[in-house]
Length: 464
Ligand SMILES: *Cc1c(COP(=O)(O)O)cnc(C)c1O
Image 1 (cartoon, rainbow, N blue to C red):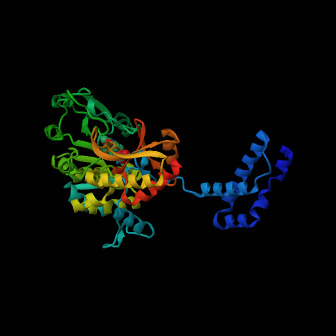
Image 2: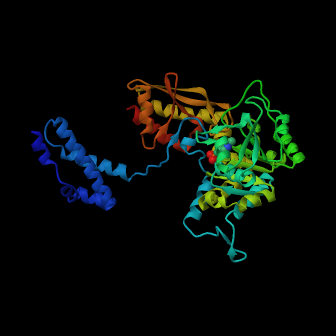
Image 3: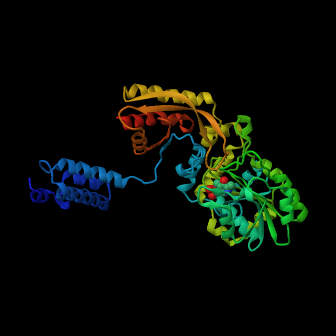
């Protein structure tokens, strides 16, 4: 058939919506979505014909099914859940902490209703949104007072702005870190209006370095958790305790940005000695900041702890309005903190903690379940085996620490490793796995038992 003839056979948009299939589309989807999908598919077909013609008749059924697919694509949410088989527990690109069931429930509960967000029920008058979680945070951390903002970057920013605008802040050169490409201590310092006063060297900073820098223009001593890197070997840093002592001597407040902020002692799980928030508070730091969605395992937010008079000052900063935390976040955060009242249950029920503290045996069992289900489903398409490997905490937590884990190693026969990895990223739901040596690795640490069935189906469909 000639190109001209083929083009003339392409149905009009009107024809396509006015048949039974079109009516079905319109019943389920907004008219503009349906029209957009039809135009996209017809345009593509027209271009294809003009470029290379077609072998045979115009495939009307194919066009119709392409439109159906395009509608589904347009109607799907762009932000969507996926399966994290990377083994990185706190993965910033994959949304960091997975919320606990309790946090999710409380968030939904508050979301669909009016609430006492800024209303004091006992007095019948205006209240503060920060009041709801204050008591639980104070009880768990031992701090005098607490405040929650939009994220930890905002927490650091507002604290620096409150205490050190146009004044100097002493920081060790070993702690001028960059986190995730966009948060750099020197830059956040500049945005806050504070002036950075670097002391020491990259690998060694002594108490005397801080002391020599003390002058009338110093507003704050700042200690920053190195988060995603760790100096090994010939190093020295000043402990928070020593800094607090120095601060007391010269009457300069001491602030520490913990980054991750771990509320339980992970050492008992043989993992790593990340400083527990409670210990840092006990050591006397005047202001402590950390993230809500790193090791805490809650929603994105920044938590500021400290002496009452300091928190009061932050609360009076007009910037607070710009970094204000949302009610859904507060609902999820309160529920998450409540779970910490029972540490053992917190480790079971808060996904981030569970993934980090689960017995290796459980990971192995899960890997084996995946492997045997795969072997049944993909006869001959790939070699599948369970092997031991290492997974990481990620998200600027537990630097250099990696943990033994079990992974399912997959070596495809018919497609390349890169093709398999790419296809897995496009299954529904997508699966994020890693390639190491000559195999695709599916790490069972970051998978939940309830995801195994879906994961196996995704892998089978990607291999087929
Ligand atoms: C992650 C991190 C931040 C930033 O926290 P967000 O919650 O991502 O804003 C700041 N400081 C340190 C040390 C960190 O590790």
